[in-house]
Length: 196
Image (tube, rainbow, N blue to C red; front, side):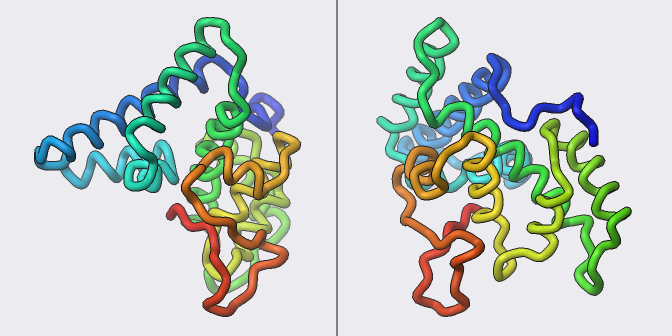
């Protein structure tokens, strides 16, 4: 296991990255309100690759909510207490990048061998700059009805010692509750967390 990468992101660079994310979201929202044309599709592809799940916030988080997050992050970088959602959000984005990396490289026709899972965990760790365990590779390659967001949220909650439902509310205040992978039902009545 490569121990040179953290299991969760708790650093000033992680907070600076979130400031950039929310400043970008604010700029996009204000531009949209002014009726300006949106950026090229390539911009959104790059932004979503760096911050998976952020486009959900672009569409649903009120401008005042975006501004509050920017102010809170800047305050934390100036010495104020770090709010409970901040470090988990950074971890969530990193784990989601790792999950997408794994999903793209896993076989859809056969289970991965132990060696393949181990190697995939190693290269996903380096690609996403966060520790990826073999168990996470196994969960993602098995999937939950093709959805990986609930797996990422549950792993983020585990790493930060939080309840997944409470963490979901903290990270995405406008999102509805969803079943965790162990309780997800295949019927259409389940409200499942999706940010893909």
